[in-house]
Length: 205
Image (cartoon, rainbow, N blue to C red):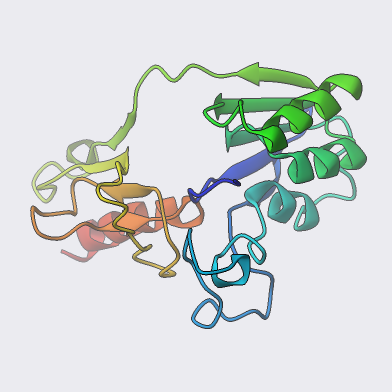
């Protein structure tokens, strides 16, 4: 099994500058509306797994620097074995991850073995909070009526949520924008879109 969440990823160099970002998605030129997003199917070709590019791959291939050698990669989930190969071959020397919930599966056992052999440092980051709050009352107290509050989605009954901006399956939502009957969700690549929408509405009010 491979990762089933939309997991954002970023690569940071020694100067603490972001030189690459990525998220799970299909290759360039491959229509999201044609290829399957299902986790299960009658055969593997009916699922997303043979087609999707992981966030680590997209971040490394779409870097805005000549090289990522010596950089640190930040990921939501511990990399799979295929992403581990790319990390090693690109010269990245440190992996910072949040969750290792698939550690018992063979692809992730192989990943850790590869990273250990290549002497890539792997560190788990313990989150101090699960919510990011941007309080617009400090920007314009008379116009701000709600807070931009990004939280991680908890999937119920395997019901998918799709990004408000790109319609990709996603793992986050804005609590300030969502209502009881409507969830305004975002993928890792479009988390800032909601912030910009809030800011635009404030200045335009």
